[in-house]
Amino acid sequence: MSFLRFAVRRLLEMAATLLGASFVIFGAMYLAPGDPASFLLSGRSASPAALAAIDQQYHLHDPFFVRYFRWLGQVLQGDFGRSIEYRTDVSKLLADRLPSTLLLVAMALVLVLAAGLVLGWVGAVRGGGGTDSAILVGTTVAVGTPSFVAAVLLQGLFSVRLGWFPTGGTGQGLADTAWHLTLPAVALALYLIGMLARVTRAAMLEQLDSEHVTVALSRGVPRQQVIWRHVFRNALGTVLTTGGLIVSTLIICTVLVESAFSIGGLGQLLELATTTKDFPTVQAISLIIVGLFMTVNLVVDLLHPLVDPRVALGARRSA
Image 1 (cartoon, rainbow, N blue to C red):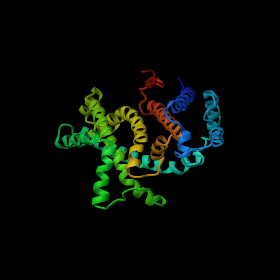
Image 2 (image 1 turned 30 degrees about the vertical axis):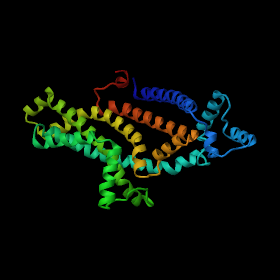
Image 3 (image 1 turned 180 degrees about the horizontal axis):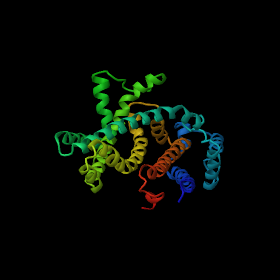
Image 4 (image 1 turned 90 degrees about the vertical axis):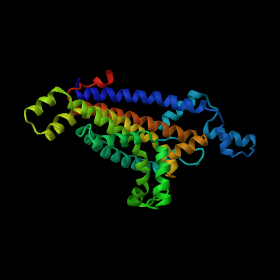
């Protein structure tokens, strides 16, 4: 199968999956208990005319499929509706908060890739030694520390006790925002650094034990050259697959980390919108998260045969 045909097929599958996900997301919110009108009124009594106006504005009692197709048509035009809690367009809320979340995820991803790959490489190359043992212990602790626990510990030590980093917020300007997001990014990345390091180490050790590596070393090829050209490159397929899971996990865990550090990003917005039953906002963020997941998976599928030519296009998906 050609690369172009494979890419087109995956894009069509992604569109169909997004359509199905939109139906599930929209339906799940309206099956949830509670009445959004009560949040609009903030517990105050209202006249039948006021309730009718709310119902007309938000279409709360229209038939389900009427509401769904109206919402889907608006989404396809870039209109996610109007927030019940914030009384403004959801698109504006997303535009205001998305940059902070994307920067946080990007910073955490850089930390994960830099630390995870280096630790995994060193652990594999020095397998069985004291350095490898220390890396195994450190990564085990990292994998066993949830993001919200790491957030609390890091905040208490480096923000409250030592005062090296801000306790929360996003700051002003790119440099100040990056400074405010440094500690949250570390908390978000810690668990995934341990995961990537262990996966990289295991994949490289498997390649080090392979016959072609043994033959190359026996022929006098420099060890570092063998490790780079044969061991690490052949292990990249496994690492890349794990990378897709890592990005997806980063997106999910931002909800916990943003809440701990009071970062006004999509994660915190999703938590507040869920609490207040802000249907349009929850639906928009959920759909965006699903779209990001599938985009990451698509990128991994397309890159995998390029990184590892032994993998045929579509093989990962059918396996």
